[in-house]
Length: 337
Image (cartoon, rainbow, N blue to C red; front, side, top):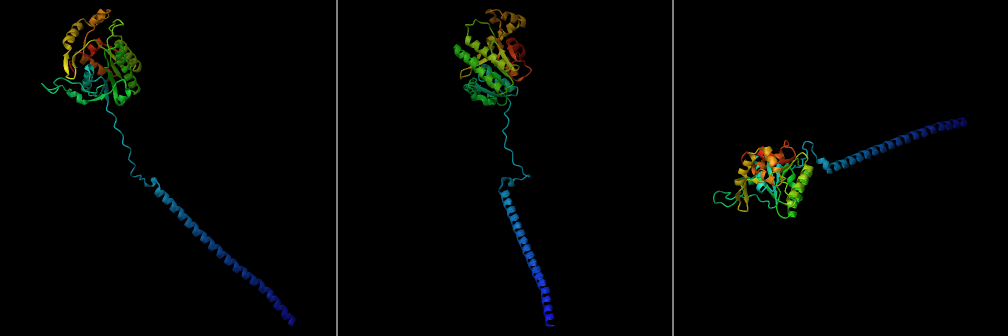
């Protein structure tokens, strides 16, 4: 009996041991699961904190960025643009006998005018302010922009090419052969080259009638004019016009006192007399060597000015030389400007 009781206790102990082990294992598993959940929760909180930190840094970077201050409802102001220069005629020698009439004529036609000359001063007229008044510029001169520059120094006046619709050069001079070639030729060539490079569409040159004088007569003058014409026609094949007058008459104002020389007192009657011969007869007589020079008709400064402005601005005027007869017949007889 004692043996049997001992066996029963031993068997019960073997049964309870696995149960305790199982209970112990289940308790350990539960604690492990709880630890894992705690760690996952901590990692989740750390991840959330990291996301918030990153988001905060990104917001700070956006706030510091210049783009963050842009407003699509208030676009950035555009940079101020310079107004386009007004269309104008550029006249070289605009204070001279022919040039001043070109300026006056251009103004009368509604064009703006810029003049380039060495002095940069407007012309003066005796008694410009009334009887007994000292010499003064004419009233129209106030509407011209007067620039002081040497025509050969193109950098000094290149800015006047902006907005330029046409160029008129009245440059010419007498003196030594070298001086005449420099002014009548080189200076004009420089003007035409600069104008063509700037895209100015048309250019007009006050040249001279080919009188056919012997080569020793004023060679620098005629050679310079010929060189200027060659450059004009090469650079402006359709918009370059060379006016070829002979004697130009009108009131020529000279000196600082602006005293007027009435060249028309001689030129006007002679122009009328030669005009009576008719174009064909007049041209035939003018072609006679040497003596033919006497039959080249004078032309008024007003006609030359009208022709110059038209040639420099009107595409209908063909490029090439314009003879004294064309100047007289097309643009003469209309009185003053």
